[in-house]
Amino acid sequence: MHKAHICARGELCDVSGVVVLSVHARAHAVHIAHTELGNESDVGVQLMGTAKKTKYISFRVTEEQLIEIETAATHVGSKTRDWCRSVVLERVGHRPSLTMGERLLFEQFVRAQYLVTQGFQLLADDNLTADEWKRFRAIANEQTSELAEKALAMHARRSRQKA
Image 1: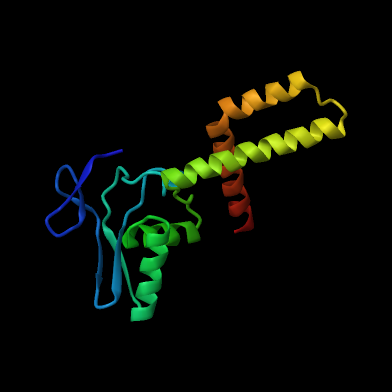
Image 2: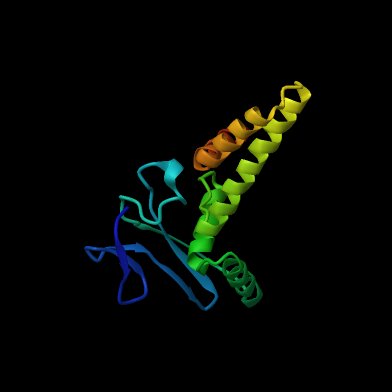
């Protein structure tokens, strides 16, 4: 991941001063800079890619739509430009980005799902023992991130199959 800073015009620039992300909301038009990242599955996970963002997407919105967009972005703790970019890229099949808080909640949800699934299976098989349950709890605690990654990968595969 490359380091970046805010340039003079409020754009996100890499260390050499090349604009890598530029969004302007003037006269109810939203402009989003775009680039292809080296690994499509990393879109949304990385803030910065290895390639320069060289393409722009822009569209006009009404005053009411701009307020809705800004409200939605604020609601999830994102800047308007980041939220718009994330929504567009997710819509075309790129892996959605998660904030740190969302990632934590997602990992805990996956952990709970794993424990419920395993627990019910042990009950159904009449194999639930204290030691076996402790073993599954230890797995869930130690491998929470890995379980979440597997869930995201499975979701991505299903999404590609539907498309």
